[in-house]
Length: 399
Image (cartoon, rainbow, N blue to C red; front, side, top):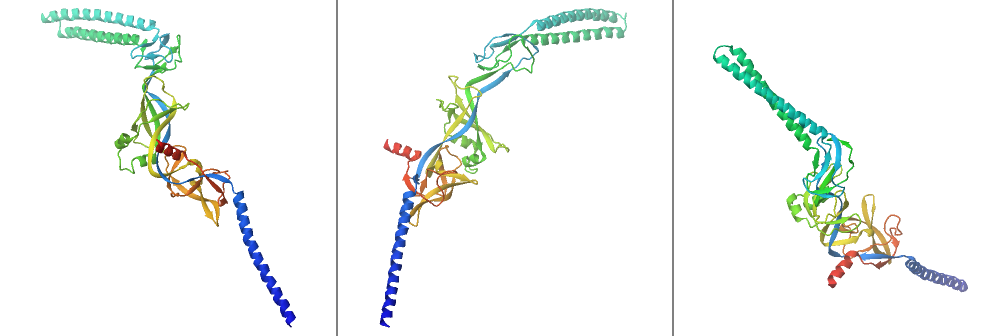
């Protein structure tokens, strides 16, 4: 019996040792697995969220127009006799641009003058007749009826003279229309019709653009307007007065050297686009800016004590914007997906956070987005990266 007891006890003791060793081996396995996961986790750039005060350049596409863009059209039909200016020429108001063939119009003036002369003769004859009949009437030689006919003939002759004079004025005016002048100071646009071309009042000969000032047209969305009015607490005049100086970036990336001013915001929101037109004015002393050019209006927007993150740290999915925060899960740093809300106005590089990120949160800025390497709940090794906003602040602090 003792022998059996000893054997049984030995077996139990060995089993306990086996369980203990197995337990120890399991902890080691977990640790090794965690270490392997950490070694295999990619190193990705991350930023630590912190409140800051920044100025972001908000950009709006724009189309440029001159202060005035006036189409030049003839006021009569005729053939172009001469083009007095070239495309792109700077002209003054009243300067001759085109002349039309005056021959038919001069002939009409001569004809009208002849008609006036003939009408004057008829008036003189009618006056003589009326005066003679009046004497005869006074002597009771003719009846009142005969004299009245002479008086009526004189009235008709005067009416014909007035009509002839009106025709002469019209003919002279048409003759003057053969000389086409600049309606304002400005720059001559394209000239599609040259000498010999037959033109009419429906023909646009060219456009004269007054480019001394340039109007830059752009649009604010309905949300922009609500934000600027602070939900209706500010008037449009107050909004415009508070607008910062506008800068203009040309289509080649060059910055125009003169700042402009936002002067008008339309009071009507286009229902099809949800946008309201606005206009900024830029002085153009050198004539660099021309009607028809495109560019970008840049308006600085100040944000105080707000969290700003790079746009590359976010991605959009089903109309929601997300980031990956780095959090410790079971002693392993992992990328965890979180929805956030950001200000609609942005500079194309950074977002101002409204909600979803708190100070101290570590946010991945590498490998994020559709098709990126970062997946939800994936182990990562964050490496601190610098944001442009942070670099700007550091540079400002070092001055």
